[in-house]
Image (tube, helix red, strand yellow):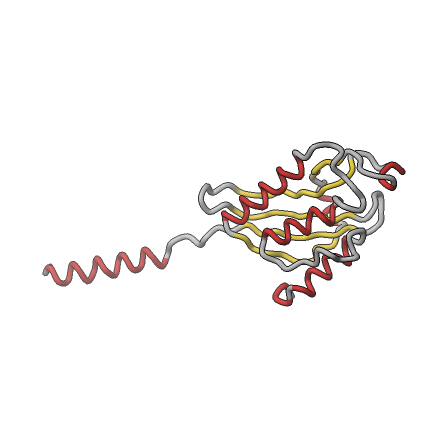
Length: 171
């Protein structure tokens, strides 16, 4: 086999190897709302996918709420927590839209979740730091436009519909 033919075959082999490379892994962040039911209205996110750099498989969800629901939330700040919901709760909720993010954005989302989880108590305020404020900040991190002066901070579904309207590409 001649040297020229070997170079051509080697080039074709390298080209084919590049075409069969694995697809880039990504994480999908889904924004959910839950209407009245066994709890008050709620907004939260679900993350699913794979981190490209590590291969870590992601299947998690996070929302922010008061540690206990009582009339105290009507009068000021109370203890808050970041929590994950059970699959049946998610299934009964409405997925409003999805955003696919890269590794760096996923890391920023997780840092923001940790920031809310680690806040000094009392951290939940119905008027200033509730589940809608939580998902609003996460929406900004994934690159969405939000209305920080929205009048819908006590209405998770309506707020997420507003975000969808501010970002026509969400469909």
